[in-house]
Each structure stands twice: as structure tokens, then as C-alpha cells.
Image (cartoon, rainbow, N blue to C red):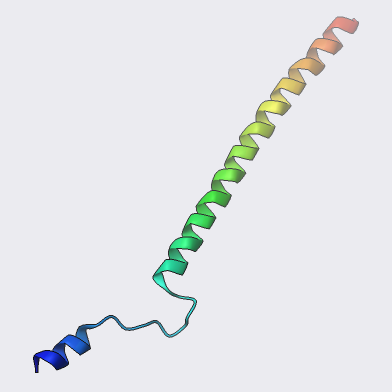
Length: 64
């Protein structure tokens, strides 16, 4: 009886092979990296555009 219980309590494999825990964690890390890169890149572009707009305002102001 104890042996049957032990076999019954073992973790069952998922129906789809790609739905393993390790694959899910890898996907989650990949998504986190993508989100981080998108946010980081947008921050860099925003800083660049702010700097460029300051230069543009300075050039327009000096030409008058």
C-alpha cells in the first residue's frame, strides 16, 4: 500500500512537452530581459531627444 501511495504522489509530467517548469522559467527570464531592454532603450532615446531639443532651441535662439 505504501508503495502504491508513493507512486501515486509522484509529480505527473505535463501533457505538452514544452510546458515544463524549466522552460517556463526560461521564458519568464527572457520576457523580463526584453521588457528591461525596451524600457532602458526608451529611456536612452528620451534623454537623447531631450538633449537634442535643447541644442535646437539654443541654435534657434542664437540666430535671432
